[in-house]
Image (cartoon, rainbow, N blue to C red):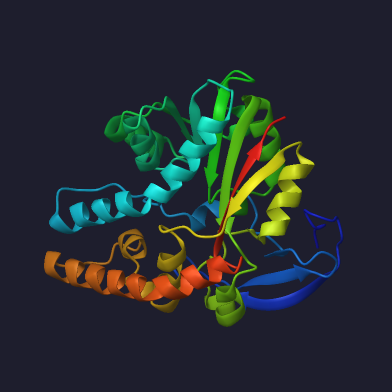
Length: 314
């Protein structure tokens, strides 16, 4: 049994067992526990380093093709990413740092492409060589394949560093945050987003909540957990946001109907005609729209299913 990342305690309370509900890469059951001292939720034991890559499909990012359904999906992704873009742009305008924006875990680079279109200098980093190549080729966003601790960037050269849904996947999130601190210029901004285990959805759905994502999510952070972790690495928390148009309603839709999730269907390589794909996508969008009022309400009450935090490097 490992020590808690936040408080160091080794005492846990068993919550439930779960498997890969979304992508179905395995039928193996994993134990989700809560720290008896601070309440951090996590997998225990975690998958071994040699085992974990098997749970990440090789097409774990979005790359549009020429089909009408794919063009519709990309238009939707651009629409819902706008609040991410706005949040990060506001952070960039508040800093005195003048370096580029680095997106860690950039995937196919759509976010970077949207930031570049708005005049920002951008860089990407991903642990997938193919994803980095797609970001460079399709979004004209220079991207490299590396872990952040070994990223080929000069210390103190980055103005804004973003990590969307990265920390919960890491064996040692503190190492990534420390590396981020070193890469940022003084007054540079860190923007992190994670699923929020303090949300109403987790209380209502338990292991069916999409944010659990066993076994890829090694940690299920609450907002306070992330703030403590970020502060322990030298950052000052500036603001937080509990609603994401991209993630909150879509996350609830995927919790309720994982078989309709477009990325899950693509990852699992489900055979579909073009018409069936569009019908399923439209059904999923209808479910997302239906989830919007509830997810906006829980976010307004400080219990949204994601939390995005801006922190400053002093």
